[in-house]
Amino acid sequence: MTARFDQGPWAAAGVQTVQPGVHRVPLPLPNDGLHAVNVYLLEDLADDGGLVMIDGGWAIPEARKALEEAMASIGRDLGDISHILVTHIHRDHYTNAVELRRLLGSRVYLGAGERPGLEMLDRLRSDEPAGSLETLRRAGAGELADRIQAMDHGGYDPSVWEAPDHWLAAETLRFGERELHVVPTPGHTKGHVVFLDEQRGLLFSGDHVLPHITPSIGFELAEPGGRPLADYLDSLRLMNRYADARLLPAHGPVADSAHTRVAELLAHHDDRLAKSLTALGEDTLDAHAVARKLGWTRRAVPFGELSAFNQMLAVNETAAHLDVLVLQGRAMVALVGGVNQYTRVR
Image (cartoon, rainbow, N blue to C red; front, side, top):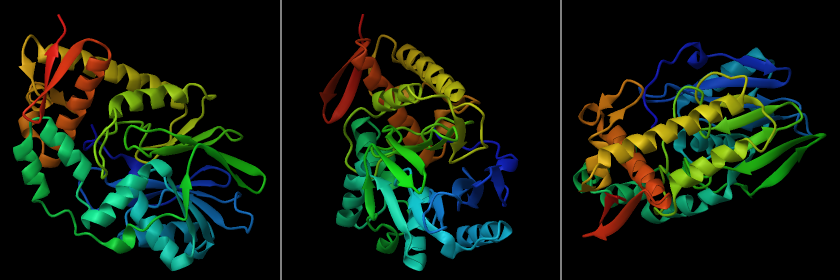
């Protein structure tokens, strides 16, 4: 699950030039968990001499100011941003892209799998994670879902949830003589995509592959459904079909090998599957009950010590692991009174 971690120097304001023409810029976030989100500026892609930006950040004044100052340090300004490629719909990646489009006329790109979530936002006129709350109730944590639903989610602002200019599929984007491969990687969200620059050996991984933490699984605005963890594990394995590349994540420092981190994440989830099965034991339990038996974050924090928001992530991640155990034939599930009840296969 996503949780607070040591920020280190990667989150400090400024610019890291990863290689000539590729710059990492951390933008601040208005919370005390993940302090920053990386956006990337690619100087040599756009035909008109403009910049291609990967991920947009959160639409707050502090992020705009940090971006302006970073761009000035490389002799650029906001008006140079012509294309913004967004890895997924979460507000720390998408909302500032929409703001910049309004300001600059930039074109915004987003994975097609995010369309149902964006349409649900428009119907509900609320940016609460409706899909995740429904998953929480089906996991036996209705009281927790009610508490989270009653929280202030920042207020729905339709101006930052507009549709992109282009819905991305598995395709290749061509900018001048360079190419970026769009690789759908469902799991963290249904429509998450990564951008692979094979020529330069760079993987812009969004929240799919993070160097220090494991991303939350299935944190959805849209209606729940599918098999988010199974999809995520498949998406991780998909990365190994491509040549190894430097890892340029949305949170954390640049790393030398995407494959190395993918192997670590797969091993982590194997361990969590084993621990979830052990916690299930010989009982019939819902995901909420199993989550309360597990430790969370690298420090094995007890469930009761997590914030309500992180409890939601923990319960929904536990449900996702239990569903994979069902797919593997190691557990069974039955819907009882609207709640999934899991039993270990003996």
